[in-house]
Image (cartoon, rainbow, N blue to C red; front, top):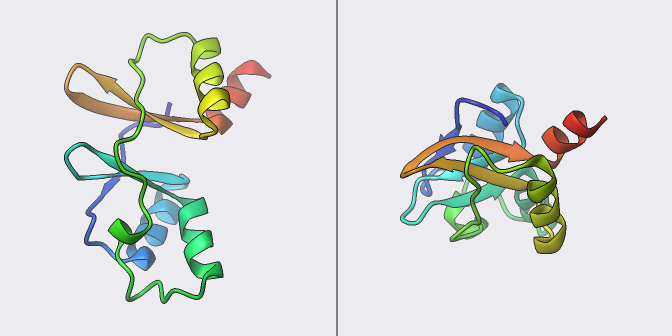
Length: 113
């Protein structure tokens, strides 16, 4: 998993989210909502393809709400199965009430190879 967990405000612009992803060399951010949401690089690409101005559109317009999470001790095979069955590529890692990291399909692939 990627740590520390990188987050973004729902009021941040898509440009700010993209910059945070680029600077941290990641492809998803947890959005600080209750419950937490997620915004991915795919969300940003889709918004751009639809002609949205990334400096004028906020993250809350493209984020996915109420995301699935996994505990830090979940087996890699179970994480891969969840990603496959849900059609997702990122899962925030939660330890109790604390969001501690993010596991991506890239992380899973790296561990399996």
